[in-house]
Length: 92
Image 1: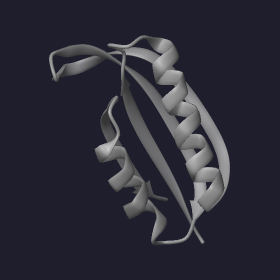
Image 2 (image 1 turned 90 degrees about the vertical axis):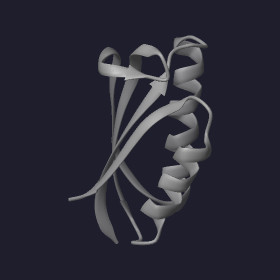
Image 3 (image 1 turned 45 degrees about the vertical axis):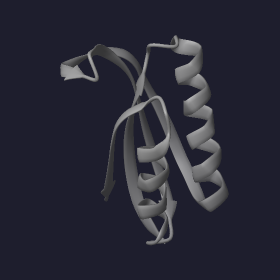
């Protein structure tokens, strides 16, 4: 098991409630595959540049421990999930 941190930026076009639903979805996914250490909600922030004509996003930082295969699967799921603007996964 290795330690990872993931930052996800969720779209706010459907409101903050939809972003919080995505936050819980990814939290459950990480808990099912690894050991979730912390979830840090940064909340609504202005983006450095427009992404899909959006100027704001909802930022969330996940710290967790997982098997080496899991981050690739998490990245794949983040890329195909509607409402995720950006994702970044880093091994600590």
